[in-house]
Length: 213
Image (cartoon, rainbow, N blue to C red; front, side, top):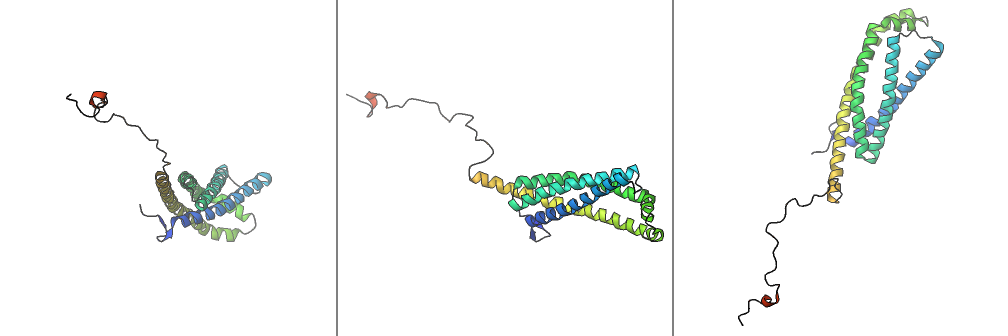
């Protein structure tokens, strides 16, 4: 198996390192912003958010926290070249990718189906004309960002899972060479060919061949 590459020519380890680092920082920042926004709205009720929009924000906050934690695990796995850590990161990415697709669809629906709530929250500051003129542009930018992030996440899963397989192969080869294979040795199932028989010249009269005396 040829070594996995990141961006065609760079080592996959570098890709896992960069992906996990950027995702840890980005997801942590997004989670903090969403949590602060939800707590602030719960205390002051100054944002007109429907129940559907509230559920979407809570879902994104939960996903962001999970991504931040698993990305940090992948970051440490890339530094230590630990197959288990990278494999756990890859598995988490696979699950989170599915969740990201679902909540991405939910976010796009909330953005395009209920734009009045966004416009109402924006115009509360007294900039109705500015909000109305830039609402469609903002919707397009956010939708494009969701699609691009989903594609990047898919490529990220490819790189991380390939590097996890590479580390697992290296680990298995090393354990095989050092005699620490995870498979226990199996004894002989069937006996050797031939039956057990006594040595022909074991008795005294025939110790040195037949005697004719």
